[in-house]
Image (tube, rainbow, N blue to C red; front, side, top):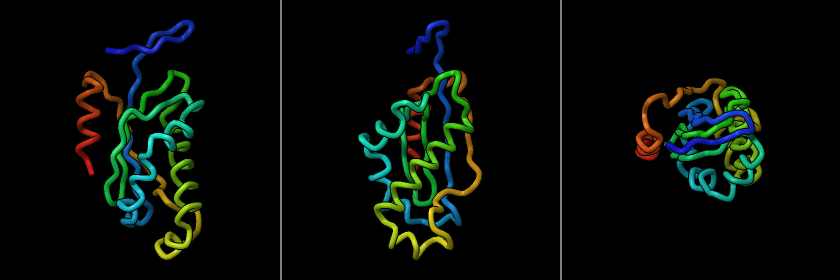
Length: 133
């Protein structure tokens, strides 16, 4: 297992996160490639205390495997992910999204699912995330 090292720590923290679309609308399938684009992911997570190991989109939700530092909380990671992945689609596809949502700048539902990967290997979780969608 690969461990990250801090000045006084050694850790492998990974969480599986699922974000569901607001109103369970289905336009995510067309936008999934843009959100999964590696340049977009790197620019958004560079100094955030986490990185995205794997991501897969379905029609109305997205599965992620997130690697994070001990100082980061899952709640904060989810908040940042929702923020990053809401701004981009509204900039690029605002006219289309206005036909799907009641209010502007809405993309994700309020809740989320998150679980620690625990004893499962990162590869097992990565395969599970990649086969969703």
